[in-house]
Image 1 (tube, rainbow, N blue to C red):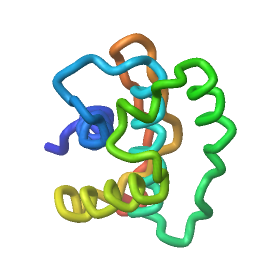
Image 2 (cartoon, rainbow, N blue to C red):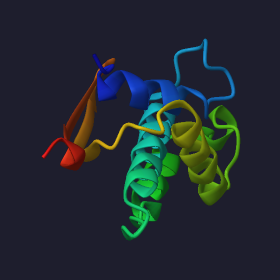
Image 3 (spheres, rainbow, N blue to C red):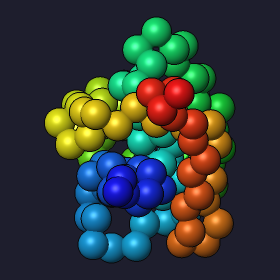
Image 4 (cartoon, rainbow, N blue to C red):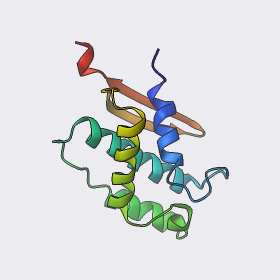
Length: 118
C-alpha cells in the first residue's frame, strides 16, 4: 500500500526548512509545500509548464519578511531541483499527479490522479 501523498509532500517540504524540528511560520510552511508540489509535478510530468509562483512568494514575504531565513535557500529553482531529485531518489515508481493541494492548520490535503492505474 502506498503512503498518502499528503505525507510524502509534507516530508519533501520539510527537507527545505533550515530547522525541520521547529514549527515553521505559516508562510514558510506554505512556501515549502508550494515548492514540493511544483517539484512533484515536474518530476511526474517533465513537459508540464512550471507555475509562476512569484506572486504568491511576494505575498508570503510581505507578510513575513524573515521568510527566507526559514528556508535553506532563496534560490527557488534550486529548491525545486533539489526536491525533484528527492522525488526521483525516494519515490521513482510513484506516478500520481497532484490535482489540488492545500493546507489548513497542520493538515495537508492532496488530491491526485494516477494515470498509470488506467
